[in-house]
Length: 427
Ligand code: UD1
Image (cartoon, rainbow, N blue to C red):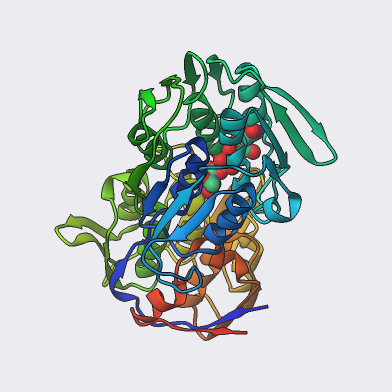
């Protein structure tokens, strides 16, 4: 299993181009199932989760071809054509679904297009229970018959789905995306209330509109979808990855460096940037991108509560915790989205951090210096938090089980090394 070895203490300085958003790319790829015509997606990030989704879609009969290369094995491949002209199967088996929870995103589109879907219950990050009951209840509200058997979700709607009103009892990102995709081909009007309004959900809605779907309320908590008989193909460029953007902003901040983040969008991260400024980091939108400057900064502790967009993203909680470990004074982080998302805490403590977890809250007493250690990556964002800790730590750190990082960060070592990090992958 690959490891990362990081020699800490170097400032992260330079320019980093941000890749396409993983969490938009995955549902956008699932959108291809809804149409007989090709969907062209550009700004596709080169990630293990994208490869897993390609395998899943190919198994269903979707042809996936990278546009700017004849071989799907050679990076960088930025543009993907997905053609679901003739679907072969409505079954997503365990061996393909288990690697990635987002595989559940094929449920709604498959059911809407073919009238049936058999999907293994998903695996993915070990950050909590993460049930899919809301996806199921929403589709049932649209007339689907669904039962669970032997670890599989069996869904059918032989006469097609019916438009319905569905109110999410908890805001769910992929739940909203699944029902949104399904509703585009349902008969009549669907209203999704208390829907997620993350930029990735809006990106999916915009792509579906380009495919001919009728959707109102994009970017709000109420999405109204008027079903159509069929969708066309489309060409769509994936939005930048706001979590990758935030991660590299923390990399600069934690090493007292200065970076310009390009090919990204400032307004996706208003809450995060506002907290970064409170911590003492200079954050500015400039013509080339976003400037993050922590040279000469005195980092100060703060209080953060994760919540839904446009609030502070749970997917940046671990990274900012690493930063608060070396910020003066007492900080408090409260995690409200997932019940088990503090697995990085014990590893940061191994690096010398002072953190007291209690239920959904962590109290962090800033220390002047973290120290290199051998640590274990446990999930995607926890893994990158350890990389960030190691970048500023005194001495060498070894991070084990980094396959999580490859799921969500395109060319992480290369991007950091180009900005001065001493980081190497050991096979
Ligand atoms: C998505 C993101 C993930 C991010 C999360 C929250 C993708 C591929 N992943 O995950 O990176 O951390 O949003 O911003 O986009 N819940 C239920 N029942 C359900 C669905 C969700 O109880 O059927 C609960 C979850 O356990 C969690 C909360 O709702 O506590 C929010 O989860 P959700 O928004 O669905 O997360 P994902 O869509 O899985």
